[in-house]
Image (cartoon, rainbow, N blue to C red; front, side):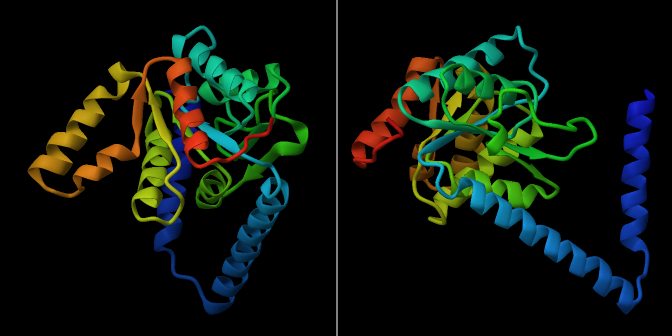
Length: 244
């Protein structure tokens, strides 16, 4: 095991041990109060920077995607098209698909937003984020609020646990009418096909844990033209005006 991952294991062990450690009341008050103020500060910065940003689409996908991969190239193309059609682009600010999406938006001089998270393997945002639209977060839950509060559409390219977390967060909030029924576009039928089959067979047919209309909360496409058309059709239906 590399020293990098050994360090990860040490951090995980430390967090587990800390969770079982008993704390006195003064320690609880001082530590938890600091956390509360830090969370509030992250919300305030997010609201201030994103409050007047205009119609934007969040692009999700793996941080591990190399620059020569078809998924990277697809994300860049989709984001460039979104900007040409009048939308800003929001990403998690990291490498891989996130970098590609910011790069595509930046290439067309569009709004390129990066909601970065402080992680051991992602220390800073990518170079294609607008300097005044980069926000650093310590807390995933605050960051996810910003994604869902300021996005009028979601484009989801192939990714891992983080991408799935962001996808199902958006699906859950739309399903429960906590946010508007904004379009969720899954890019890559081959990648998403197995998950969609499982949703249909296991969640819907076998266990009835979702309803038939829930399958209409997302679209599956294979190219940039289809992806942007879904977003455009949504805006046309609701007579909204992008950033033309």
